[in-house]
Length: 291
Image (tube, rainbow, N blue to C red; front, side, top):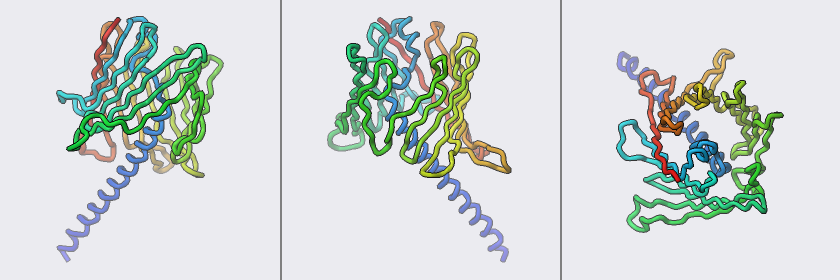
């Protein structure tokens, strides 16, 4: 009986941990699916640095190196963005040094008021015995409206059935976006302060015919120069005793050069339910070329 009394609690703890890990694994799959859908839909996403800064400082290329740990010497990921003399992006390359590479080429047709974006997806193949060089897996081309940067010739896919519906206020600020995703649709609400800084993003996910669920909440703060200094993203929400609580926090600290260009981003992730676990850290560092 003493043996059973000691074994049963251990088994319960093991099953509890297994259930928790399974839950986090499923949540991570869902998160990655949602974000991969969104990234696939926003090839004209904001540049690493604001367009006005790029034009003012005559930036030719930005390199963003991502390190899985603050002490790592070699980057795990890298993003390269190249711009013409008018400050327009002409190429974006994202590399995961162990797996794949995405290359986006931007061509502008002012007469037709459109941007043509050609995407090439390469299998990096570093772990294979054969075909270790870049192997083209997929090539696609899409057109966007030069003014609105929305799809010009929209084509539905298995992940996205309809174009995003954007709602703006009288000042032209985006206050709501509704977009389809694999499991249903997402609605994002945007809030601004009196200086027109985006200070909050709130994402709700509706899967199939279910009720909207809070997926993430983002809080952003700025310094006196209008530079974003901190962003906190909250995930994994649940309701306890009528109170909505989150379990995962992702905090990003932004540091800048004297000329206003972004120097580095330090990202810290922590799970509140794992009291004894150490927060995970990722750091991105930036390099610039100028005209």
